Structure formats: structure tokens, C-alpha cells
Image 1 (tube, one colour):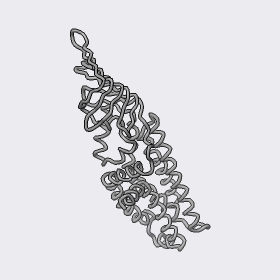
Image 2 (cartoon, helix red, strand yellow; image 1 turned 90 degrees about the vertical axis):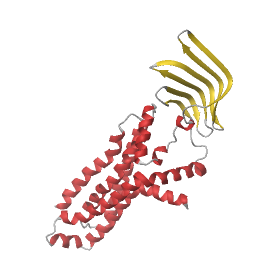
Image 3 (cartoon, helix red, strand yellow; image 1 turned 180 degrees about the vertical axis):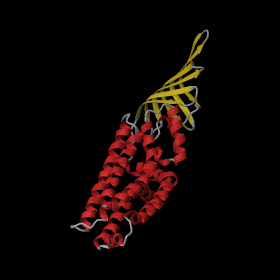
Image 4 (cartoon, one colour; image 1 turned 120 degrees about the horizontal axis):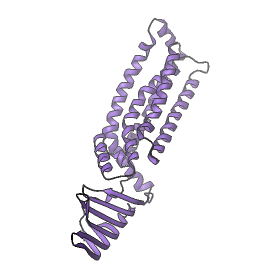
Length: 306
């Protein structure tokens, strides 16, 4: 039951603009087919006045959706994804290669290959700097996290002094390091599980650490705002398209609505994937579908007023 609740909230957050769009299309088409829209406008009421209740309703729904997406949905996303990886995606978390992190102002870590499921990395290095000068470097063939300590295999530490270098070696060293092993590779869905304020803090921290996958987190950040805002755009499109009585009746309006909804989802997915996999601007990628359909909405609204 908990998973069902998380599943419902997780997908409702993403699909609610489409649900709102289809329901608005259905309701307004029914009014138009019964010639109630014509009667309403013929009484001297302007089209803007006719549109006002839709905008008020969209504002209320948008506010609720914004509240959900920034505070409540992240908790649902955490439960949903954990359940997915536990029961449906076993072993699907890929190994991460060439992971580089700045863990604080002075220390940098690197692993050539990291396995999240076993919390094990290979070719581990830790470099410690003071005033931009390398003071020591730790190397290990393998690093793993066991019983709350780090286990370094084939450990080597090179200490740089004014009189030369000191080399320390051990086959195995159990030690404590100033970072969390999971920080080597945040899970792919970690951005979805954070509230908006926590997500901003997480992004700032990952930028400082030199995370190469920042676009994934920025896409998630911008979608927290863009998806609720799309409710306004889809409401205007729905009213503009369905307020005019068509020969084919309600079916034609619903068909047009489904095509528009699928087009939006297609553009949203394509631009989001491009931003996550390249250096393309996440802001442009996330907001392009909204900007495009906002232009379409204004064009349709202009024609509907005539």
C-alpha cells in the first residue's frame, strides 16, 4: 500500500498537466456541443470573462502542484525508486567509471571504477593540498566500506616534505576517511528525492566537488517549476481549441487534445535527455516545450476570440 501511494503521487506530479488538459477539453467541448458557449458569449460577456474561471482554477491547481513537487513528492519519489531498485531492477545499477570528487577544501578523491551495490572502488587515490601545494597522496588498488571503516588494499602513502618524499606501504589498512562512500556516485534518482531547498544545497555541494553529471540535477530542479507552470499553458490551449463547436463533435476535440499532450511529452523527454547527456543548457531544454506551447496557446487564443 505504501508503494501504491508513492507510485500514485510520483506519476500524478508528472502527468497532472495532461490530466488537467484532457479534463478541461472534455468539459469545454461538452459546453460547446450544447451551444452553451455561444449563448454565453452572445449575452455580451467577453471571451476574457469566459476564460477567467479556467485561469483561477489553473492557478489553484498550479499552486497545489508546486507545493507537492517541492515538498511532498520527493519523499514519494524516494519510496518509489527504492522499491523499484529492490524488486524490479536488481543489478541494474551500473558501475561508475572515472569518478572524481572534491570532498572538502583540501582533499580530492578518485576511483577508476566504482560498484554502488558492493560499495567497492578500484584504483583509489586521495590527494591532500594546503595552499595549493600537494602535501600527500594516498593510493590503493581497492577501497571498500566495511563495518563503518574504509578498507584500503595495497595501500601506499607518499608524503611530500621539504627534505624529500616519504613512502609508506601496507597490504591492508583499515582507516576512517572524511567522506561518505556513497558520495562517489550519487544514485541516478537522488535529485528526485530531495526537497527544493535541499536540492539547491545538493547542487551547490556537487558543483564544488566537481561532479560531471550536473545537468541531470539541473533538469530536475527546473522541472519542479516548469511542470506546474505548464498547467496555465494547457488550460489556455484546451479552452481555445474546445470552445468552438466542430462538425466532428467532442471526439475531434479530444483527438486534438491527445495529439497536443503527446507532443508535449515527446518534446519534454527529448530535450531533457539531450541536456542530461550533453552540455546543452538544462534551462533551455526544460523550458523549450513550455515556450513553444505558450506560443501555440497565444495563437489559438487569438483565433478563438474571433
